[in-house]
Length: 176
Figure (cartoon, rainbow, N blue to C red):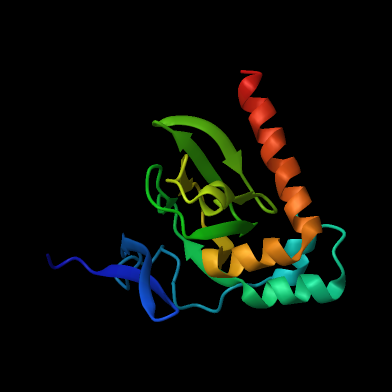
């Protein structure tokens, strides 16, 4: 196979984990594509996090600590950020752009700046429940499982807000 791939990996306690592996969709030959090596992002992650209800009301120090853990990721239109059924290793907050959420190929939502996704698979260790695809140029901040879990375990306010967000999603699904 001669197609280049982008591989994201992490090491935890001596074990190497494959976080994501996807075909490279942005190359020099695609002049209209996002340059994945360009300076990312334009916004301060702390400013983006304070606009997310999950992190609203936290102290500046807590937000700065979370922001320091975030890794910025760029996606071109059509790039799959997470795929339904795959393992979950990252939680994302959208900085800019839009993404489509599909379940079994049915579009169920459109996400934009301040929206977050990916937390369900991180919480229960199960497969991703939906596919999220960049609808436009998309910039997200990601937290891996190894960063996300201690953050929630050590901060009851985030844990509570996370429970509220999940309960809201459950009620929305049940009402359909």
